[in-house]
Image 1 (cartoon, rainbow, N blue to C red):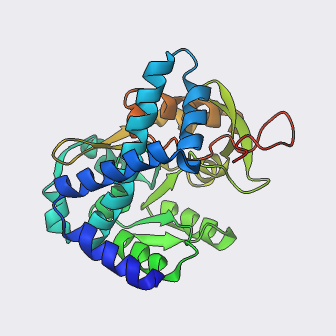
Image 2: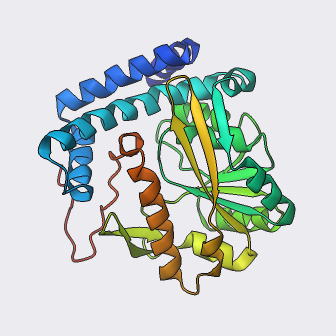
Length: 291
């Protein structure tokens, strides 16, 4: 039954125009908002955490808009996975920083860091057309969905790795070979693989792997963002050269999170606030999200 439903959803959402697809996604997000389920509660808590200075009215509007964008991520992902490159490329309105990125690739590998902001699902698709690229990947529990995601994310040649020790070795190899390695590093790492670093003035357990990759390969560091626009997407690549000179892991993580925070504040409704970013507290053993 799961396989059948996934197949139906995949065919429907990938066959719609991008505009219609997003309308369905926004409607789905609105339903989530009024159902008051886990996604809404997590989004609400995170926005209250990160924007205490906003009025309750403004925060509620941000929560609603954020959940609409979350719905769009779900439906839009099927659209990206199920359409050919030429069709998707027609919706990319601009790419800022591409000259800097291609120049860096001639000199070394590029570690591409970014938060789950906007149409982040597009990143492996786009980078696969630029150069050999790889990214970490966590398999979902549903095999049928796993197949759809793997095929969709690798359709332009991107390689996907599981995130274990062997995958870290693959990441090192990619960067040493002047390739692109993509790491969405705004999620909690496994136990023992992170440090607490400020994120919206709150301690957030942050992966130390980006720092280790830079130290071992001397690769260039860029930040990416894919903004969802009315007609399509705007992509930007921003050099973070100052991260290469950081003497300590803590300095690197603090500056990386500060860069993410600046990016998110410019477009807060498109960030995935439904992720339990502060799940592991720094001051004890308790559940920050008890629902």
